[in-house]
Image 1 (cartoon, helix red, strand yellow):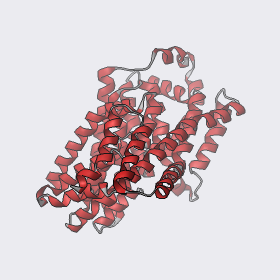
Image 2 (cartoon, rainbow, N blue to C red):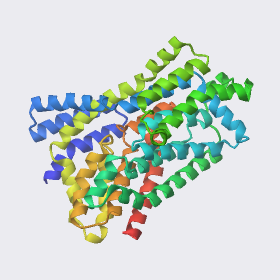
Image 3 (tube, helix red, strand yellow):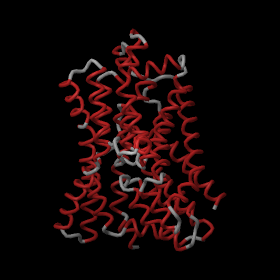
Image 4 (cartoon, rainbow, N blue to C red):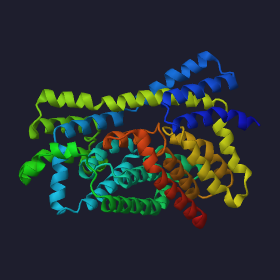
Length: 417
């Protein structure tokens, strides 16, 4: 009975979200219900409200990369790179979509996070093929799988520690599944573009004058976008190669800005203005998500998520892993910005049963997939911005592909474990 009462605020929040009500209104209603049901003190609720905002605004790397990507886009660098790629591939633009999806996956795997990379790669693929649903879903899938199996991510550390295994060994054990899902996602992107064609808005096509430029001009103007992509994807590898920590988010934006001034039509002032303007979307999104998550934290104070996670321990041992994966997936939807927090609720149950680290890894991936249909996941917001569509449209487009991937993951988990 306690769970049925405590879950009411969460159900109300989800219902309002899927009725396309603003997430802050949905969160407010759920937060008020949580305060009334749990008797939460107003002073503590106020602390949680401020804390939620400060936590989200502290996520600086996606802000830096978002601003940088907007800057090179405004300079025409991304447009030039896409046109150059189109000419090199002789019109096989679907292949380019698959390649960019793999780049997104590799970048996420190396960085241990997806949103910052999405800020760079989403405008690139959007300029090439437009808002093709399969491409967007493919980028969401590789992001989810990448940051939940990367040896550089908190999620992987939690999964490994829950099984008492070395992080590197756990990441190595999960790598075949990571590669398999990456290839599946790339194939989905190629199929989507082949099936639907290029879905670029007419006004964008009219503004595109790259067809009139020579390859030399295109290459020159595309260098800032290429440099930013290389620094985002391979910065750590380059640092290891040269022996110093030269490439970081800070130096990436500085180097990219200098290249933009030198190699594109933008002046110094225009480049600086473009960098500042590019940060506005992600900053406002993080502010809104912080407010929403403060209300989710109020619901969490009721013990709702802990009670849901505990359900996994009440089922037969033969199906505990699939049930844990489904519960983790569902909990991740309203609390999409805190994947690691969801795992701290689910993994102890599996750990007590002595399941192998691969089981923990599958739960981590399921959690990551759940975040990709969450209105408060930064990667979802980044996809919406990159493809110039609403967040709810990203979620609706992702839903069937994410659910299909979850089903496949569950089947793999049942077979392997």
